[in-house]
Amino acid sequence: MLNTVAHNMSVLRDKDTVEGMYIDGEWKVSASNNKREVINPATNEVIGSVTEGTIEEVNQAVIAAKDAFYKNGWKSTYARTRADYLLQIASKLEERKDEIAMLETLNNGKIYDDSITDVEDAINQFQYYAGLATKPHGQTYEVPDEIQAMVIREPIGVVAIIVPWNYPLVMAAQKMSAALAAGCTVVVKPSTQTPLTLIRLFEIIDEVGLPNGVANLVHGSGSVVGNELINHPDVEKISFTGGTSTGKQIMKDAANTLKKVGLELGGKSPNIVFADADFETAVDYALLGIFAGQGQVCSAGSRLLLEKSIYDKFVPELVSRAKKIKLGPGWDDTTEMGPLISISHMENVLNYVEIGKEEGAELLCGGKQVTEGDLAKGNFVEPTIFTNTTPDMRIVQEEIFGPVLVIQVFETEEEAIELANGTDFGLAAAVFTNDGAKAQRVIRRLQAGITWINTYHPTFNEAPWSGYKQSGLGGDLGTYGFEEYLYKKQVNIALEVKPSGFYKG
Ligand code: NDP
Image (cartoon, rainbow, N blue to C red; front, side, top):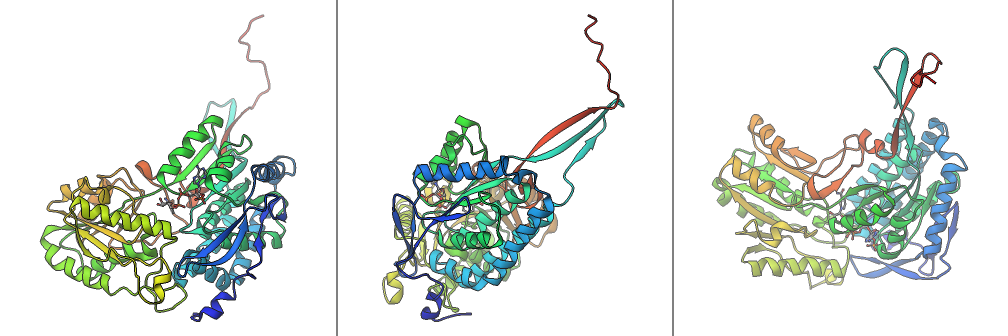
């Protein structure tokens, strides 16, 4: 692994380079010349700049995608042709894996090994959906003899893909790979904070010669560029990952043109540890569940539900290990936790710490920005744990999206389930116990789309990713994620061509 800053910085472009948008097969610097700087959250230094699109340029991207879909025939390309493009994208990502991973680390702050995992996930997504594109999708069904009835699938059309900053490459890749494999065309809008790795992905798309307009990249804020995509009459589906309040707004706005919407939203996920769980494993995953990615993970185990009888043993061990987590920049191979994405997000997280104290929760560790040494330049917040919480507290109910764990205590299985389900969210949940029947029993009653028994965080591109309750609508990944981009059309064929005879004349 690379561990010198000088070497890491070599993946960045010259500081005078202004990165453009990719519209209809051409790189384009916005006519507005509206530049936005991109920041490294470990140092708060400028590492690049992009030009943000105007409404007219978003319109050009949508029209290019529409023409590529309807006029230029992407929707009816042979599935094998689409699969070939996706496989070429995957292999070029593989060739540039280290460069793109380091760029993700510099832009998002995540540790380098996590960025490598993200790029590998993206590669696998393009490969997986390349495979799925060529597999049979149709069905026939049993009806009276004189009719042959079947279902065929057809791509929906132009898809707007809007993604957040916590997994900039992989969230876009999982949506793009499925949509393109299905025969849709796409316009992608990254977060204003993390556009850089998607620019590299679009360089690859350009190199493999994907037909013009099939995949377009636009930059700009959610309120201007995002909003235009949501309201554009020629966008037929929105595939969005981001916060729950943004998701609600998008759903309202999309109603005007009755767009299909797929929403992957926030969470406040419970990690339930029963007294009979393997102690070491449960402590380890309680830490990983919340502190991986600095807690900026939608499925983070941000609520630890602990059986009362092990509280006195578990909590001191948890806190002592949390205090030892090594903070640092993602490119340093000894770092265990990186910075938060921005100063303003860090301030939000620290504000929640104050809210927790005011609400009467007890702060066991952390709760502060690192203000000494090299890390003082970046957005580093110490691993933070609260106890003595009540279910109505804001720190228990709201997504903080940072390294802040809240402990809730239970005495019975029933109480654990009630606490676990006691928020508006329903993204993920985990159960730690050595009692197999109890594990299954509890999992079946948890309102969450992604669950684990005796582990936390592993998920796979083959399996669907979707939230219950206010954590989302529709889903990504697996065969279900592919179906999101396809209409189902029933076709009924008369086996004998003759009048119905209904109107006697
Ligand atoms: P936001 O909802 O703030 O933003 C997500 C994206 O939407 C950004 O590109 C943003 O643009 C854009 N956007 C904002 N407002 C609008 C609008 N009105 N119309 C159209 N687009 C808009 O989320 P964050 O970027 O802060 O990401 C963190 C959130 O994402 C967390 O809540 C997290 O839980 C969730 N998430 C969910 C996942 C899941 O799979 N369920 C996975 C990963 C994250 P801009 O650049 O201007 O902000």
